[in-house]
Amino acid sequence: AQSVAQPEDQVNVAEGNPLTVKCTYSVSGNPYLFWYVQYPNRGLQFLLKYITGDNLVKGSYGFEAEFNKSQTSFHLKKPSALVSDSALYFCAVGGSARQLTFGSGTQLTVLP
Amino acid sequence: GAGVSQSPSNKVTEKGKDVELRCDPISGHTALYWYRQSLGQGLEFLIYFQGNSAPDKSGLPSDRFSAERTGGSVSTLTIQRTQQEDSAVYLCASSSLRTANTEAFFGQGTRLTVV
Image (cartoon, rainbow over all chains, first blue to last red; front, side, top):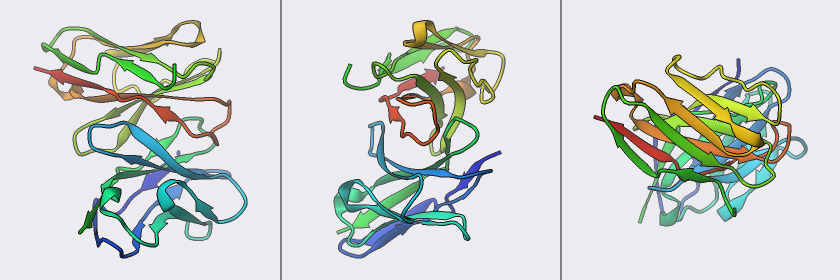
C-alpha cells in the first residue's frame, strides 16, 4: 500500500525567509509525487509534480520540490516566503494504485 | 465546463436521511476521484473511476456509501442513513489520462453537515 507522511502539522516562517514543508512517501515501483495547496474556503490547487528526470522540480508561485530517492522524500521549498503563501499544503503520491494518496496536510503560516 | 463542478456547495441533513452529492468533471477527463476531508484532517480517498474499468471502491468507509458514474462523465456519491461522523467536505477531482502521473483538478467541494 502507498502512503505519505507530512510530519509537521504547522510550519511558521517569517516573510522573506526560506521555507520548507516536509514530505516522505512509501510506494512500490516508481513514485509519482505531487504538491497541492488549499487556500481558505477554496479547493485544492496543483502546485508541482515529479514524474521522472531532474530531482529538482519547479512549480507555480516560485515553489520547488526536491525528490530524494534514498530518503524517500519530496520536500517543498521556496527561497523567500510571502504572507500570501499562508495556506494548507498537501503532498500526494501516485503509483501502482491509480488513486492519489494524500498526506495529512501542513498548515503554513508566513508572518509579516 | 472550465473546471470541476460540485453541487450542492453546502448540504445540511438530518441524521438518518440519505444524501446525493454530484460531480461534473472537466470535459474529456477519463479519471474521476472522490475524497473526504474532515475538519483538521487530510484527504481520505473514497472511490476512483477510470473510463469503463471497474471502479476502485477500496476507500468507501461502509456499505452506506456508494457512487456511480453515468456515461463516463457525471458522478453521484450517495450516502444512505447519514450519521454525524459523515459530516465533512466531500471533494471530487478529475484528470485526463489513464496513468497515475497526471495531476488531478479538484472541485470546490460539498460541505455536508449531519445534524
